[in-house]
Image (cartoon, rainbow, N blue to C red; front, side, top):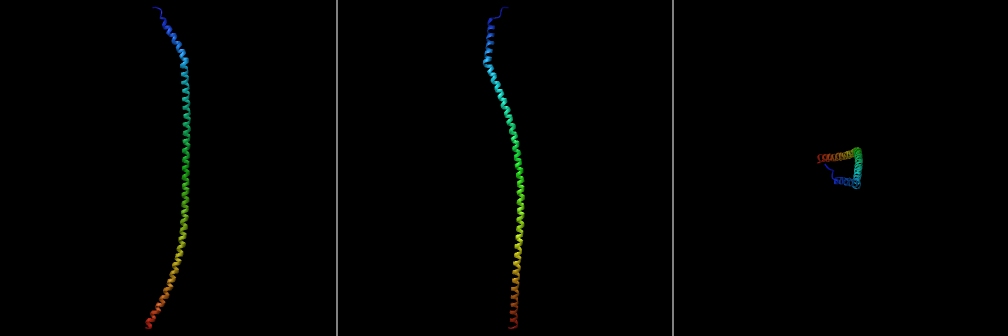
Length: 139
């Protein structure tokens, strides 16, 4: 066995020097860029998770506001319905009073007309009775 070939050692030294220079010129900046990228991605993910939580909170508040508005709407609707029913009841009572008043006036007019017609009939029957009596008694 002899001595190893000197070219092997030369190649080994050149490889080590190349790795050292390339490491400082290419690998370290590349690894630094990768680290910055990694930090940015995690920062963006954290910010997006915070914004997602904020969006969920806003959605919850929005749903609560809608439910509150709906309850208020139902309350106002039932109040308005009660008010309209009350107004209708008052108008019905007023209408019934007016109709009773008109009915009484109509009855009084009918009674007056009946009395007037009855007097006229009595007078005419009296005069017809007299006329018949004259014709039979005084032919």
